[in-house]
Amino acid sequence: MGPEEGVMQSRAQAIGILTDLMTDQPLVICNGFPSRETHKLHDRDANFYMIGSMGATAGIALGIALAKPEKKVIAFDGDGNVLMSLGTLATVGAQKPGNFIHVVFDNEVYGSTGNQPTYSRVVNLEKVAKAAGYVNVERVWEREDIAYEFKDMLSREGPSFLLIKVNEQIEDADRVPIEPAAITRRFKAALQ
Amino acid sequence: MIDSDDFVKALNDIGFDFFTGVPDSILGGIIAALTDSRSYTPAVREDEAVAMAAGAYLSGKVPAVLMQNSGLGNAINVLASLNLIYRIPCLLLLSWRGFQGQDAPEHLVMGQTMTQLMETLRIPYRTLSPETMTNDLQWTAKTFMEQQIPVALLLKKGVVKTVQP
Image (cartoon, rainbow over all chains, first blue to last red):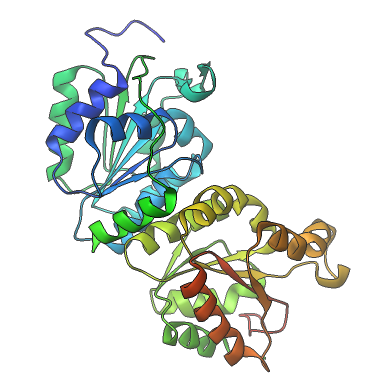
């Protein structure tokens, strides 16, 4: 990755900035350390933690957004997940759900399998999202910009794509201790 | 042959209210009927469709996913590591291409192995027919509600009316 001016956050720091600005929005978090870190930092019933089904984050969040147009729906995704299901950017861009915010914590590696590099090092995912039809697209890495753009997206008509370049730091966070079927039950109840 | 509008109405009557998928010619009549009633959200890949249906289910909808049986191959990881372990149900409407080896070559392997795949994954399924339709739909609703996992109806060519005569 080329030199970026300013200070890159860790993904956990970025998660903290965003969750501080959230209220009761339904949140889908991709598999791997993003779910583990979000659970450690800000567990709530309206968090849907994925432990498998890599690539499905935005699809699940899109299903919720279409079914619940009155709610702002947020996805915490990773660069590996997005690359695995790049086609979903087209589905979102074409359906244009105004209540959809797609956050991508882009550390340019597969964090759970040994930090092998991903192609987001050279492929600008936010440019793909823009071409696919996302209405608001930003690429950020500094603390103030992350907060500013996310706050803006929360108040605007989307779909929005917030690519946050983060460093490779991983929080010491255990696997999500909730049984998957229990995650389903409490998330479903939180959305009623 | 089952009329496609009647079939969609029958699905609505037992509660299905969210439809997504990737097309197949066998499913064309059903997709046309759903599109006319603005009930269908196309997906670009079958695993994405299953994910969208899961999101809809978590939001209180009762979802169905339409796909050619080739798409089952694309959908397996989401079925296995999302639906089956999170107990998230959906109806899979699978067209049966390659049935009894009668089809273009690309369909022959999946046409032969599909039911074994379903059995291996322990996804309950039934083969739809005009004579058994009422029973099949009752079974669908019951199994969906009781087991909270994906259930499948297999649609052979000529069972539900398509767009082409």
